[in-house]
Length: 256
Ligand code: ADP
Image (cartoon, rainbow, N blue to C red):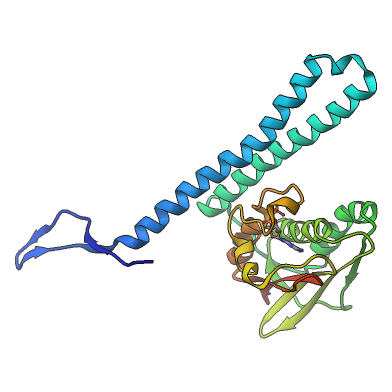
């Protein structure tokens, strides 16, 4: 956009005359827009499940509750919407703790095997239900990295969970590692719907979803949180994809 320079501070008098503080206002404007969009996004993300809950409970009140089968279906839907709200609140408080530097990482030299195994174990029932093969391929010995095991597991759960959400039945997901210039690179690759090239960096932005109609019911916060966690380790995270054929999410951790 246009750059705009302006005076935003009261001039300070010094011996040599005035010291004028000039700052790039376009950056302040951009940050203000980011903040406004953030609030608008949260409102939208909260309103969607709340609207559903209102409709579901009203329909129950209007008589749907008298048929036990119908009522059970409604209650399942209510449960899902409440879960969505709970997830949003958890992710928001996670994100704000990490962004404000309140979430202190417990970095220890260690092996990434446990984090990968735990993440894969946690999500394999879900992969199975979705008809997707989830595989882990690790070398016998792994170089040690400095990591907060729980946080790295959280990143892996996010990546594998996404891979499951965006991969149709019959697809495959693989978790693997490789060493690359003083880092260990961990990747999660899937044979799913993929990501258009223009969106490959944007998916790490808060609330960003490639396609709202097939967003898989997520909040759009998982990758933003993952990015913060990886950066707090001194690593980086990136996505590659052949649109329509699958996506690969990788992150690097410095070797211990
Ligand atoms: P959420 O999954 O909750 O929507 P994320 O921040 O984890 O939020 O992901 C942001 C968006 O990135 C998703 O909505 C989806 O559009 C895209 N995305 C993430 N992972 C994948 C993947 N493995 N394949 C295709 N698209 C993906």
